Image 1 (cartoon, rainbow, N blue to C red):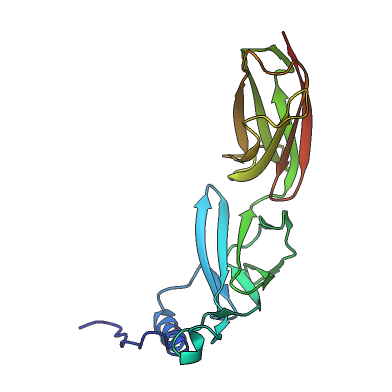
Image 2: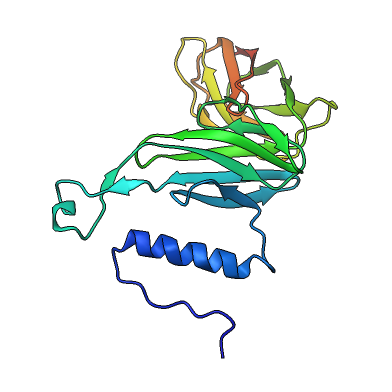
Length: 232
């Protein structure tokens, strides 16, 4: 015999599904405590982890019947905005909104972190939760090379202790050649364990002169830049 029996719910009965989920939550309370929680069932949370850093994927499931298929009373396809307080069961940390590129105001309550989240209709958000704040972003490596050769530089995101951040940090890299044209490595990257080593392979016909490299980490918004001299 099952310890907990979940009765079947009709497809499309969202309120019924939420009630069953709440009942299941109550029945599991003695043996299971969720790592993350929201004050409303309309906010759906999922976690991933790298080292000591948590990644919280939060989705707005607040919906109503619209004018397309909703007129039949079967599918809620019209998204609605949502405000919710989210809770993560870790005693301390710094929370970054990776879509907004900034830290989130938090408060510590009974060994947990709490913060407010504001969702647009059907919107999802991604938060990075680290042990220490991001302190700096640096670029090291070669400053000069010739065409048809390679040049390597290292990007490091450090915390307030001076160590590389124990996280996978999203980066935006922009490389412009001496004529102001973007290089092939321009775009989005990730600094695993706070570091990214990038090798730029130069073509024999690449423009000579001063190249410009700009890097922005997308958690706190800090940026750094460097100049590279390309010669014949």
